[in-house]
Length: 183
Image (cartoon, rainbow, N blue to C red; front, side):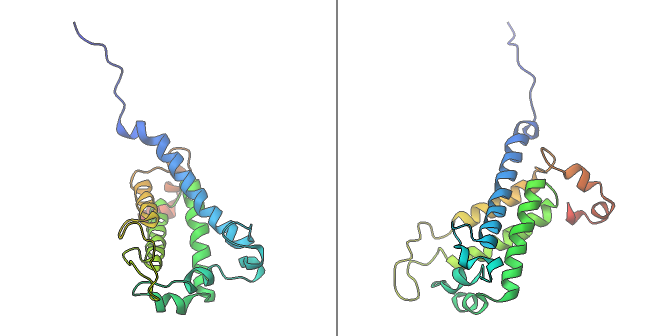
């Protein structure tokens, strides 16, 4: 007797929808961070500290860095206009790219760099801050910044923008065809 088998699906077909959902949710995570910091919705950013109210999206976080070999560097750039603009532009651009499924390669690289810098600012390998207090780090290497960076890379590597995204249209634009790094 031979068993009847359902048609096999490829890994790409099976994973396309979950990857599209992961892409969109991750994009919304970046967009939420942008909106909260820009308008001060009262979650991570209070209204008086909103970027559009004259606050700095980098000053609070970077000025409180109290650990790691880049502590003084992060203090020096905390609140700098160019750091604020680059950070906010990065959050917005990566979020839009992910939600729309376009520019996935550049979004993955720039988002991963942003996550690496934020990882360095929190410096999980340290057990103690520069003042001697416990950092409460739960893992000396892998934290959520590393996971987000890996998610971005996986989303770009698997062409997740094709499902529920505009990747096919985007990738067919002449400028994108001439410059594959824009895919």
